[in-house]
Image 1 (cartoon, rainbow, N blue to C red):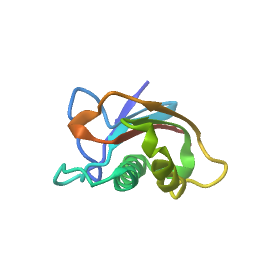
Image 2 (cartoon, rainbow, N blue to C red):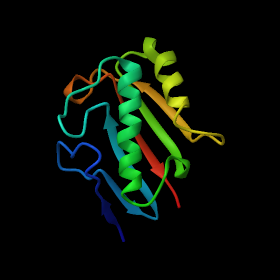
Image 3 (cartoon, helix red, strand yellow):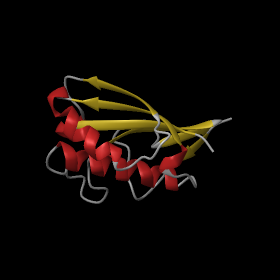
Length: 123
């Protein structure tokens, strides 16, 4: 059985998908660094990473979870040359034991974003 998770504190999906789905674990769709109200992107990789993780935190909170519940993330970046800046900001949002993570470079992201982060969380 699966259940949709929705948060008004994170941007609404821009396609036919859920912000997150609970099915044993909570599978969170990728979040970009967009303001939930205006949809505008923050400027720069660090600011977009911070906002993407804030948006992810809001989705988790809608299901009673916190960032400590995250066990796996995937970070999609348009330029791995910005990895150090993303990584520095990312590290501010998690504590040991850190989630497992994959980071991949992609050709582009929705709305011209520099980074997108998805997550899997458990209770």
